[in-house]
Image (cartoon, rainbow, N blue to C red; front, side, top):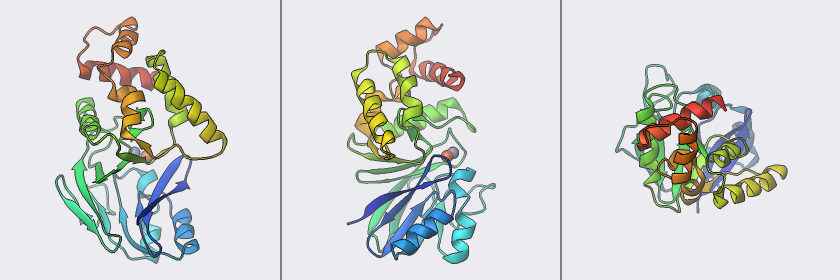
Length: 253
Ligand code: ZN
Ligand code: FE
C-alpha cells in the first residue's frame, strides 16, 4: 500500500513523498536537504521526481537530488525549465513502477505556463493550482485559463484527496469568511485549522468536497459571495467576472 508523506520545506512548502517500505517518488522538491534526510532516515530508494511547474520553490532541489540519485524528472517541458527529462502532456498516463501507481496528466495553465497536475484514483497532486480555500496566483497566462483549469479540477470526484504544495489554510480562510460571512463550513474549517496549526500539524491533504464547500474560487455562483462582491461594485455576475473580481480583491487583501 502506497503512503503519501509531507516533507515540510522552505517557508511553507510541502514536498510530497509517495512511498512504500522500499521505494519513493518525490513531488516538487523545492530543496534537497529535507528530501535526502527523509530518504536516508527511511532507508528508501528514490525512483523518480515529479514536477508540476518550474517555480523555484518546486524545482530548487532537483539538481542536488540528481547529483546523488540519477533519476528521471517527469513534467511538462518548457524553455525555462531545464530539469525535465521526460515530457508529459495533456492526456498522458504515467505509470510508476514498482510503486504500482498510474497518474493521468492534465495541463492546467493560469498560474505558470506548463503547469500540470497528476491524478490517480482518489489522489490529486495539484502543485500550486488549488490551496486550502484559495488558488495559485495568475503569474502567466490568463485569468480565464486559471478559472478553466480550476473548473476542470473541481469536476473530479468529491472524495479526491488534494495534495497541494503550500500550507496556506490559516492565511486563506479568513478571506473566504469575508466573502461568505454566514457559511458554516468555512467557520468550522477555520476552527479546525487553528487546532491543527497550533499543534504544528499540516492541514493538507483535504478533500475536494471540503474545497467545494469553502473555497471562494470554486464557488463563483454562490449567492452570498456574489452579493458580497456586488456590495464592492461588481456588475457582471458571470462566473468568470466573479472569479476576476475575487482575484483582484484577494491580491489587495
Ligand atoms: Zn508556483
Ligand atoms: Fe509554489
